[in-house]
Length: 110
Length: 116
Picture 1 (cartoon, one colour):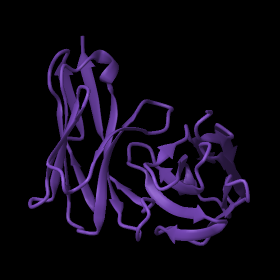
Picture 2 (cartoon, rainbow over the protein chains, first blue to last red):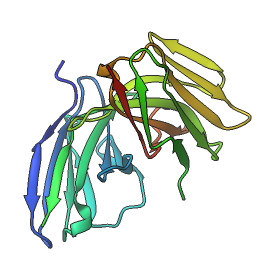
Picture 3 (cartoon, rainbow over the protein chains, first blue to last red):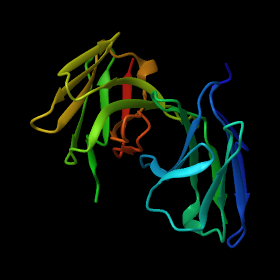
């Protein structure tokens, strides 16, 4: 079992650009959540996908959007990037169980 | 508004010591309280978790103590080792109907250093 896998591992983008991050959940898991972890902070909940629909959302602007595919994998899209979007983006998967996290994607906005 | 408050921010102990990390919450809509361990460059890994109807849970060298009336819970690491040096996060999960997939609210984290 490969666990939760995220790609890419690192990414550098310019202010104003758009970015797409990807997540493959742990085998058997149908729910995917995304978190943003700023340096030295705890992860903050962005949103959660289940059955290809956004089920819960945290306090993030509409620039943050997502998608879940029929195979349960997910994408996080961020438009009009700001310097403050620089962070570790974590994907977590679950199926009526504890959440298991991937290694994250380190996004740097310059 | 910080819904889960964690302390201390950092902690240094000698090998074999018992570091204690504390968390407090206010919202009664939480139904599950996990602790995560995170190494640099890695995602958080679940260590141990407890439900509010239990006052204590032990798994190996890790123990959670839970005080529902005080809305506080803590992590104790027995016989700490240098390999335990990491950042520890407490979290609280919102109830989400009958499923166990409510969003997690994390504390600010505690950086633990265990000296040899």
